[in-house]
Structures are given as C-alpha cells and as structure tokens.
Length: 448
Image 1 (cartoon, rainbow, N blue to C red):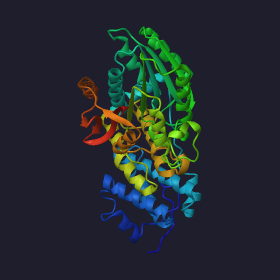
Image 2: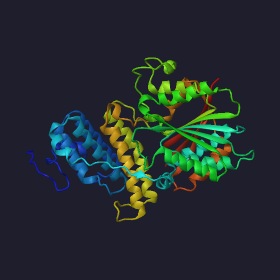
Image 3: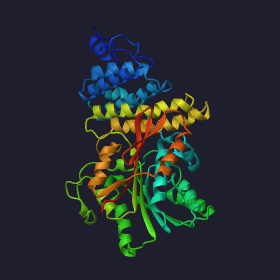
Image 4: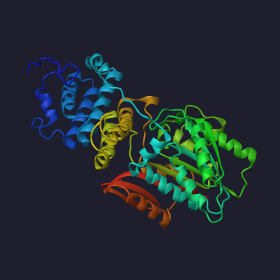
C-alpha cells in the first residue's frame, strides 16, 4: 500500500494512512471497540514497543489512531489513554529514538501543569477520595495506640501530603483523659517538586499547625529539616540521630513515631555510590531503601507507620512499567467519574476544576513513569509484599491494627462512594476499589 503523507486536523504531526501492518496491531474491526480498556492498553503497548524499537513508521500510525480515540474530556478510559499518549509523545521527543517524530512532536507535546494548593484547597482535595484519608485514619489510630501513656510524642513525618494528617491527630490527643501530651513534629521538607504542591513555605505551614494545636489546648513544637529523596533522606535521619546522641535517648516519657505516607517510594532503589560514616549500617551493595530502613531502626522508634500505593513501577523496561501503570492508574480515573462532573476549564462547575487539578497530578505521575529515566524517574512504587520483606530484613516486625482502628477506617469509607472496600492481610490493612488493591497501611515495631 502506498502511504500518502497528510496532516490530520486533530493530529499535529505528519502521519500515514494505516497499513496492513498497523491494522493488525490495532486488531480487527476498524475503530469499533477501540475505546475499550483492553484495546487501549494493547495500542499503548504496541506504540511503546515501536518507540523503543525506533520503528517510527509504526509509532506514527498507532499515535494517529490513539490521537483520534483518546480524548482529554472523554470517559475515564479515554482520559487515561490520553495521559499515556502524552507521555509516549514526550518520551519520543526526549529519547531521540524515533528521529522522524522528534521535530514534529517536540513542539506539539503538551506541557503538564500542576496546581499549587493553598492549605484549604489541599485539605479539601485530599478529602475527595479515601486515597489519602485511608492512610490518615489507619495511621492515626495506630499512632494513638502506640503512644498511650507517653507525655511527649515526637512525630517524624515523611509525608507526600504536607502534614494534612496532623490536624486530625491533634484533635484526637486533645481529648485524652490523662491530658494532652506535648507534640514535637519534625517534618522532612523535601526539595523535589512532587505533586501535590503547596503555595506556602513549611515555616508558614508550621505556624498554622502550631496555632491550630494551641486552639485545642495542645502544646506543639514544629521543625522542618530540608531534605531530599535522592540521598535516601540520609541527612534528615542523621540530624535526628545526632540530636538523640546529644540529648540522650533514655527518656521513658517520650515516644518516637515515624510516619511514612506515600513518600518512601521516591527513595531511589539503586545501590549506594558512596556511604557516609552514619550509613555504616549499609554496605556498598545496599540500596538506598535498605540503608534508609536500617538507619531508621537505629533511631529506636516506638512505632513506624508505612502507608503507600500497592503498585509496581520499578521495572527497568519502559513497556513493562507502562502496562503496570495502566493497570493501576485506571483506578483514580474511574473513581473521578463517580463523584466529579465531567468537563474541564474555568467555565464549568467546581467539580471540573477539581478534576483538572486531580488529573493534572496523575498526568505528571504517568509521564514520570513512562517518559523519564535515571535520576529523573522518581515514581518507583513497590508492592506491599516487597516493603514487608524490606521492613523485616531491617529488623522490624509487623503489628496489627486494633479493632477500634479498623472500625474507624470502615466508618470513613462509608462517607465515600460505593466501590471502596477494606480487606485485612495478616496484620495489614488494604484499601480496595471494586476489589482491586489500591493503598496499603502497615505498622511496625522493633523486632528485638
């Protein structure tokens, strides 16, 4: 078949009419059924494979089809596919593998914009779904159980959501029968711009939290330590450890709780290139994550709470990552359609604006998984089973959630759309959507 080069009105790069080879890749039946999730996934995988193989002709043909069926304002599957389409275009432009595509797509690859939230906006944003609230509720119940009887609670917070969990915890300790404890909150102020992002500094955020605690008659100290995921938070943990050595670590009245909320998967999984004196617990062959957990154990924490997404984005093969991400990230797109009106832009409802913010962050995640490599690829989620083994290897043992804590999580889920569920896996809790694992919550203490 002779290919005639054209420019489609909705496709800004040169394309060719689909050839028999492309038709076979798309599946029989022309365009009918192409919006089905399985067909979308097959098209994306074929396109990703073509991009990686430098098959620019096939990549162009599949991109043309995707461009016509993946709509930014369509149903959840179309919007999901559109996000992956953007990511593949971005990868083709950055990698230089498809030279025929580079010049055409470089100027047309859309820029992903992420919203900077005010504190009020972010608080409302994380309340949209249980994606974060599940972890907040489970973690706070475990923290309250762990610190019972302590007059000082030191919380080391490594959280993606900028302390949005803390006000509820302050509320809970304020009503403690023995009187509220002193809360010392130490926050890892990560320097990387990872969504969701705030429009104010951590010092300003800390002042708001201290004022809120004071309004509840709770004394609170706030401190932020500038830190980075890229070094496995080594300087952050080292500073806390150094202060323990100076102040002494024998206080029976102070509980140290480390709260890790969807932040640890940003620690690189690669092996350490160099190890500081503090990192003696590691070895040249240790990963940043393994060394972080071993150094965390050296802090002698009363409890460690680990909440994260139950997904696997760690493969070195981009096509494998794309498939894994597609089969996980359909969930947030699907949930959007249960409570937010479809539509984008400023002219629609408030729901459309919230959707734009929410899906903007998802597009950032998808592009990072698909289009980035090396140090720039920071979205490296690991499934629960792998984190459980990491924690055990580092000298921790899992402990279960109390029945009261489980009841609180169930009560929170009742406030959201049908489809969300909770299951228990040994000591752990797992949030589900339509039976699929979404987020896990685990609690850990020292093994001996």
